Length: 243
View 1 (cartoon, rainbow, N blue to C red):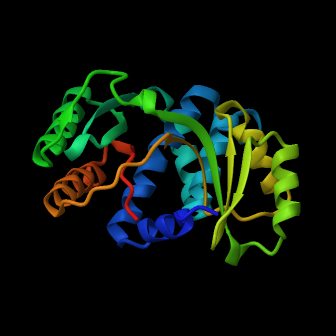
View 2: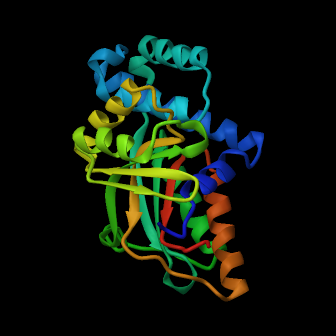
View 3: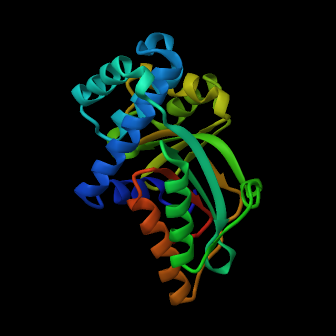
């Protein structure tokens, strides 16, 4: 068992405030638009869109909001001009940070991300400067309070579908997959009616770093808060051990 409660962290992030929920819906709305533009509005023929819909449901986005987003994107396919950009850098004490953004204005986003790092006493680095210390993986978190299936049965479903690893924690189960196997594993769990607190391809640090200096913690938190408030920022990954 790991000492980290991934489900508790997810729950905390989701319940932070209504503004955070609005931000999550904005993020997912953009991802829906890009997925529809790339593969069409029918989830049956668009695995990327299926994955985004699963992420939307895990974040309690209402079905009618999801449907509206798909229809809007299908009608405005030519108007969707978002593109993915990634930034890498360092927080205090060399904490590694990766920022993924989906933007229609790269200059604006780059300036905002750079400002967030600077205000938290960090710095933007070159591409590849920290990503080598992360592994891209599909990650599915299942809350024990939402799932009645026992651990062995759940593990067999996940592994038979192609998962790389399965672990049990105090309040949750974690399923790890290769990025290419994520959709198949997620869909196998969904077919069995297993509710997922989180289901997405993410960046997992190979090692975590603790911060004991309060000033460094405050600086890093400032950077993370500023990035979290930026509508262009889709995800932020770091190797800070928050425990």
